[in-house]
Structure formats: structure tokens, C-alpha cells
Amino acid sequence: MTRLLVINPGSTTTKVAVFDDECEVAGKTIEHDPQKLSSFPRTSDQAPYRLEEIREFLKENNIPEESLSGVSARGGITKPIAAGTYTVNDAMLADLIEAKRADHPSNLGGIIANIISKERNIPAFITDPVSVDEISDVARVAGWPECQRHSMAHALNIRATSRKAAEQLGKRFEETNFVAVHMGGGISVCPVSGGRILDANNANEAGPFSPERSGSLPLASLIELCKSGKYTEKDIKVLTTKKGGVVAYLGTNDVREVLKMVDEGEDKAKLVLDAMLYQIAGEIGAMASVIGGKIDGIVLTGSMAYADYVRDTIGKYTSYIAPAINMAGQMEMEALALGVLRVLKGQEKAKEY
Picture 1: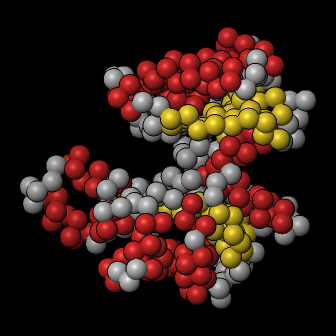
Picture 2: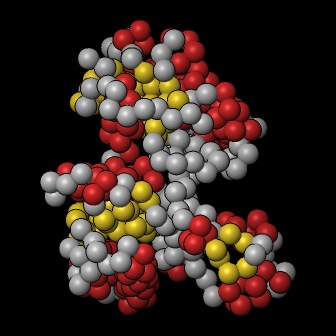
Picture 3: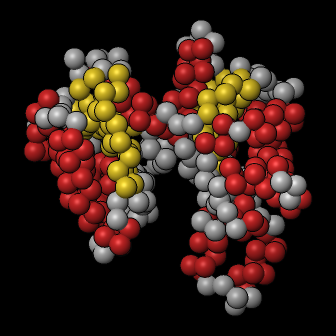
């Protein structure tokens, strides 16, 4: 039996689980004290504090650390890399600690996994971080030489749900074509073909607006706002990546609340929700063209996919392309465990960062 500890850090939580082979035997979302977290100068400095609470979780569930075969962690904002499972090594650790590309809570996954790895002499891995970048050269050309498109997407959940959708169709993952749509606080729409994410809208910069992000904006209007003196550079970054989209219009980033507003007859809420779904459908059509329209299915995943209204509205626009495959929710913890299991069982080879 292979026993894995799976670690998935978020901004104020750490999701943690223990898997015996493919079976989750214990799991918890640890809620951290926001004031305590804010007291650390850098996000990476939170690692010992979060690790202490992870160890408390193990004690609560009578799981001795000596029984662990390995640690699987959510990948942080690494340099652009190919999809797959990577051994946590010194080069990766240095990038995560220094937060060279972004000071993001997900960086803590590899850092915490490394501490346990060194203490217990067991391997530590990350799988499919958001910086997975396998898009082609033609997809990188943005339209201005000093700007380049790059892949940034919910790669872990997109690849996991696409792999599961392939299994449901009785096909190998590498033989399928999907447009996968992760719909959470941010929205990623990706063509997945031959086991690769061929393109991505990069939810922080473009694509449909989402509960928290502005998506693509009219360029001339954005330039005028930047020149106006009304906002600082930091303001613009926050407003477009954390306080844009639905929350900017309606004051909430919870789509469940928006659906309730719609049910209660609020016209503005319906307009904003329908506009977001309209843009998602448009992005699906654009990404379907990247793989020639030969699509096995449109994979709808993330928390928004639980809502019938969301799925039905998108379906009205896109059913001519391919049938929707409902993969509501997230498979991140399972995906992190299965990625490492494939390596430890010799089905895949771990990659070096």
C-alpha cells in the first residue's frame, strides 16, 4: 500500500488529505487565522505555522508520519513548465521561496512538502501547477512585440477532469479532444488535445470576465483609466484580478447569491450573469476552432458548474459544437494523489525541474 499526504494551500486555508493508494482515508480544510497569516513578512514564512496545523490533523486522525510513503503538493507559481509530476528539488524550492514570479499561497505546497520529505526521507512532488505552459509558438504572438501571451490556467483540475472524461468515453486521454472550462473565482477555457493544453485564455489577463476578474477589457478605455490619475498601478491590478467581474457589478463574488438575485427578479443580476455566460460560450467557440472543431466534449468543471442555469445557458450556445460533460466541483486533491501514484507505481516518470 502507498500512503500519501496531499497538501493544497490557499490564501487562508490549507486543504489536506491522506490517500491509501487511490482511496482518501482522511481529509480536512484547515482554516487559518488571517491575522496570524498577515503577521508573516513573506508568504513562504508561513510554512512552519501551516505545517504545525497539518501535523495536528494527522494526530487527530491517528496517522503517524512514519507511515507516509510520500508527499504530494499543489504546485506554486513556478517558471513555465510542461505538464506532469515533478520531484521537488533545490531549484524549484529556491524559486518558490523567493517567489520569483508571484508571491502566491500555492508556493507553500512545495515548501511544506520539502520539509516533511527531508525529515522523513520520503519523496516530495508537485503535479500540474498553474504555470504549465505547452502552448504553441503561434499562440504566443499577442499583437505587440513587447508583449507575449503565455499559459496560465487551472491546469491541475482541467487535466484531471479531462482525463476522467476520457475514461467515461472509453478512450485514452491522449486520444481525445476537449474544450475544458474551469469556472470558479477565475475562469480558464482551454483546448485539451492529445493530452496537452494547447492554449489558455489566462484568466488574469484575458478571456471572459469571472466572479472576481475582469477578463478582456476594451483597450482604449483601460488606457484612459490608467492615465486618469484615479487609480494607481496597484489599484488596477487588484481591480482587474480580485475585484473585477461580477463582484464589481453586484458586490458579491458568490454565484449562488447571484442566482438567488436572478430568481428574485433582479434584472441587473440577470444581465451580468448572462453576460458572463455569453462570454464563456464565445471563448469555448474560439478554443474549439484551435482543434478544428473535432471535439469529443465540452468539460464543465469548477464550482459554478453545479448550477443548472449555468450549464443550460452555456449549452444553448455551444451544443452545436459538442455535448457538455458535467464535471462540477474540483478534483484537485484526487488529481494530486493520482499524479504521484502513477510515478511511484512506475506508470509515469517524475520530471526534473
